[in-house]
Length: 317
Length: 317
Image (cartoon, rainbow over all chains, first blue to last red):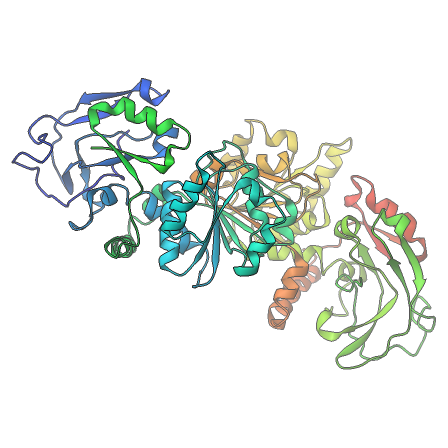
């Protein structure tokens, strides 16, 4: 149960001999491990780890920052640790000029957003997409990457006390429309489609009713991609949507994409180049972060599990 | 609200001057028409129709036999009539040596089966597919076309008093496995997959629970195609099936395919050639039919609406 995908890697081939910024270079590597499934703050523990021996294509990796993603919380598949050894092909090189916070959050959310905007529909400037959970890490990356490509975004969020603030923040990122799930069901939606075309792509991280409503606005032959299920309810599709509107339903999981493209380093490099270019131009920023030192992991895990927390990404440093 | 797709056409360019087999050549054309939606036997009426004037690419068409398909019953989109005039490009030529009953049922069910087996997954001999409503017109065509291509079929049917007879009949058509919806849910299903691979394609004409169960047996990255919703319940998919098994959900509607391929007569001709070859070789037979004269349309419509009737296709002559 190791976790490497979200790490920041600077392409160091040999383990550092000098003290690093965080002063942990010579102490044994530590990591968050768990022996059983359960509530993350209860089952996850910070432990000293063995110093690994290097062989083959192995690279000794030092963690600078690692995000706590909802997927980690939902599944506790991953483990956060200060250092570890991994085969080079499992790791992602990030150029030095990319800020640590961007780099730490690059390999999961922006990559997921990039692939979903690229791999399912050929979108041209002026086309539109619709997404729910628009305030998630992936959602914010979708807004920014789409904006940089001239693609309009319709962003669905849950209603909440500070809604105007959230709307303002997503608009500042480049969102064209921000609506609540309630608005999605209202006939006024047709006014919205006077100014922009119906979406050819829908991105679903919720499931249940939200998904069914979103699907209603999809263009015929459009695609809905499911990459999460925050509502813990199945995706429900009226048979008529398949038969008479020819909608296509797909799924996406970044981890699987990387496995499927393990023999395609050029594809990965091309995506990373595109994303790093967007970061350098200021078109793709890291989500608002709360930085938490690794030893305070319990507070970090609890914070990551609170509802509406997704506006602030929790980072272990 | 005209209906031409299911007609048998013999490629007659001019209206017949002599009496036809059924003696209706000189009487005015009659047709089943309806002025409002409702229960088909109540709203559908047999009326004399105007003799149409021919122009452009129009062809005067005489009906020899036309099936009552479940889609007609569900939607009353179609109208059955003895003669009519249609643009040539809307019509399908059927070679003279194809029996009338095969020809009458060729353009909807076998075409639907052919396209669904062809357009979504590249199936090779030895691959398997799974379908529900296996006893429907499409289902029987799927069994036969798959068999002719060396593709194994797992056929799901509803339990019924005469199940052994139905199993025998579908096995005689070439089915590899016939199971009930109840069996689909049992752990014994894994024994079945010791002898054949998990299906890469699932064909869904039911919706609801049956669909969710069928989906569980689909290979990762496999496709489920929905072409009907007999259970009148939505298709429900666990989010995990999209994310971790990368299943793809699509829909199919033969009418839409023909619209989309209106400019591709070669594609249509190639399909018709393949199907006619199968018919000539005895590998594709018309489903068991009950032939009903047009004036007895009310009894025909009532019979077509009975549950479990799909084993016998109702044909108006």
